[in-house]
Image (cartoon, rainbow, N blue to C red):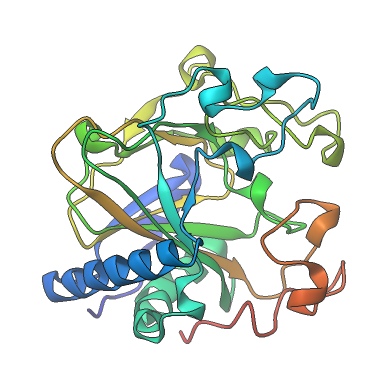
Length: 292
C-alpha cells in the first residue's frame, strides 16, 4: 500500500508520547500472505529447533547465579501454559517476506521518527500468543537489548490479527521514553540482569502508574502498525480470548549508528559474524539499507 509521509503533528505526537499509530500499512490480501508465511516458517523452524519462546529460562541468564529466583518460568513458579513463541530475522531465510520487511512506507516513516536520512533493518521478529495460552511480558524497553551506542532505532509492530486488551495487546507508558535508559529485564519476572554492563545510574523499570505515567493499550486492526521508541516502556498481558494474536515486528536503525556489540549486550550475532568492530557504524550484510 502507498502512503504519504507523516506530518508534523504525528512526529510531534511520537516525540511527546513515545509511540504512534499511523494506521493501516498492509491490506487484507497482504495480511493473509503474511499469515501464511508465518505458519510455514513456524513449521520449518520448529522442526529445526529454532522456534524460540520469550518466556524460556534458557534464553535469559540469571541476574545472580546463586539466586534461582533471578530466573523466571517453572523454576520460580511460572505457568507452563504461558508462553510467547517467536521467530528471529525471517528476512534472511524467507525471500517472500522481504517485500514487507523492506517496505518503503515503513522505512520512510521510521526515518522520519528517528530523524535519519536513511535507515537499516536491525532485525525482525514474528511472534504470537495462542488462544488462552499466550504469556505475559513485563514492562521493558527495547534499547537495553540492542548492541548500539545510541537508542537511534524504532520498533514497528504490525498486527496480523485484530488485537486488544483481551487477546494480549501491547500497553505503553506514555512519556516513559523521556526518563532515559533502564536496565534490561527478564520477561517472566521483570528482574534486571547484565547489571555490570550498565552504569550505576541506570535503574530498573518501575510500575509506570506509581510514577504518574499514563498507560495506554495499543489496540490495532489487522494490517495496522504502531511505532514506539527504543526507550518507551511497554508490556503485554496474556491472551485470554479464543482469538489468535500474531504480529510482525521490525526494528529500524538509523544509518551511521555506532555498533557496540558484546561490550554492551550479548546479541544474537557476534561482532565477528556481522563483520563489525566495536565503534564502527552499523552496516554490512546483516543490517541492510531500506529503500526509501
